[in-house]
Image (cartoon, rainbow, N blue to C red; front, side):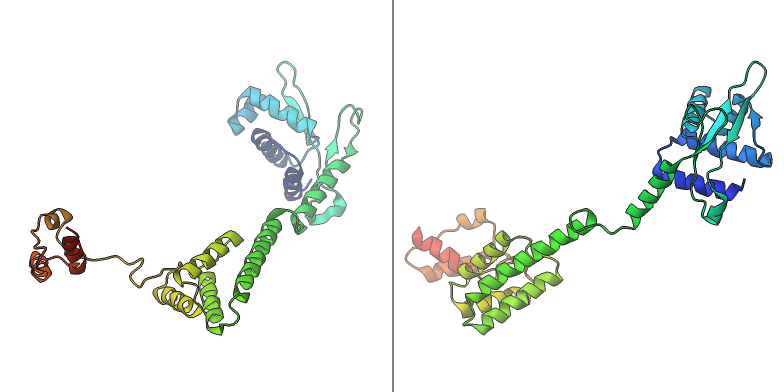
Length: 287
């Protein structure tokens, strides 16, 4: 038996069959033992010696040996008093398979009868089926390709919605160009609308801020692009932090205003350090 071919065939076997970690460990230890014995047909070992190598309990070892036997990987005879158990490792590759180590699992038991060994076609079929699934591209109706197909479909729907809105403004090439520039900007930011609802809301906001006038809407879009905004705003100072050295609201409320002389009121506000003179004048006129 060739150690490398046997080990590769075992890894192929794992691709199509579930084996507990403890059983995998026991199998590799048995392979090492048989390798040190120059691949004799059968070899003997006590449970204690295998337990010492695997660091598992006797109960776990017995369970692992039974699992390996049921899978047709090994055969063993339980030792009697003062005698160790006998083990036989089934060859998992055929001589024709060469270095590929194709799994040719052998099963023994009630169906095989005696020492008879039966080639397991199920193992070969499962392994080939698993490799076929890994190499076969996903269809458009499943897997990752399905997600890509869905995203592509959503983008097409959003683009159709954009084109539909642009048709309303075909009489104004400047607005069409401004919309295209904004769409390209959002694509580069990877923030293009994901749904038609979001697209419709943006165009509705554009019409509101632009008063429904195409050239005003152009200026609104250009303002957003110039400031790197991904939304639509109606005034130049929208979405900008306001720095002010005005007195706190509580102190401004304490100022005395002369309802008959607005100019004097303005001077008082300036002296107090307030910025928004116009706002304070309006307050005093309404007082």
